[in-house]
Image 1 (cartoon, rainbow over the protein chains, first blue to last red):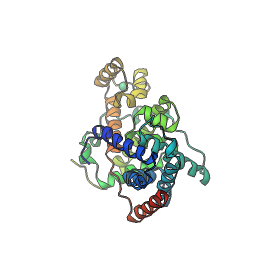
Image 2 (cartoon, rainbow over the protein chains, first blue to last red):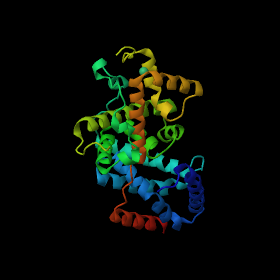
Image 3 (cartoon, chains in turn purple, blue):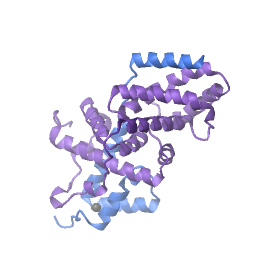
Image 4 (cartoon, rainbow over the protein chains, first blue to last red):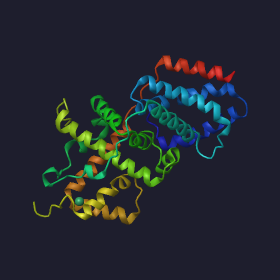
Length: 212
Length: 84
Ligand SMILES: [Zn+2]
């Protein structure tokens, strides 16, 4: 858990490349290893993208089925992990369309601007000055997860890929087939949305006394 | 409160739009310097930056949940069947 994700990602990618090439060359008995390697990542991605645990489980299963089906078409132009998330994302979007959810809400940056002098925060609140590892207890993690679920899906996707899965702006753009500018715009609004939820929590709903 | 910038001050607005790019180190040096200088003199923007940074940092620290054993078994079975 404590390894630097950036350092270990190069090695992981090399391992993935070898494993995927072996599967592509006919060693399909190695496929279960690939599943084992990514089931946890995909399950957590599913939990964040779908509200429902069963939907999250379906997402993992459908993603791996599609990976198996299309793996010979993967040309190693991107990292395997990025291709995997592209599939997971399209599975997720397809599910949404089938369920016929209500149309998506658009977040506007103006909504997060203080409307007048009285609404302005003039000083950094205490919570934003506490070391994050100290601040992030279970209750706060629950709050944040709930806030992420409350994001309209197109913002949630970008927020999850960028800030939770750790993909770069350009990687996220390629996974979602949108421009880098678009990724940045959505991420920015998503972060303001989440910040607003955290602010409300710290100002009104928190049960525990100040962490200081 | 003299010197307090208006919430719709143009420089604050410009700053507000670029905040995420600043946090993600996606801006050129000149833009970074401009932002840092602005934050020094503008407490509301400083507060805005710190809270947004904390929000982003918290997201990055969220922990993963383990895969339920039942799902893991089901996936293993599926993968083995596909591999035959
Ligand atoms: Zn300002």
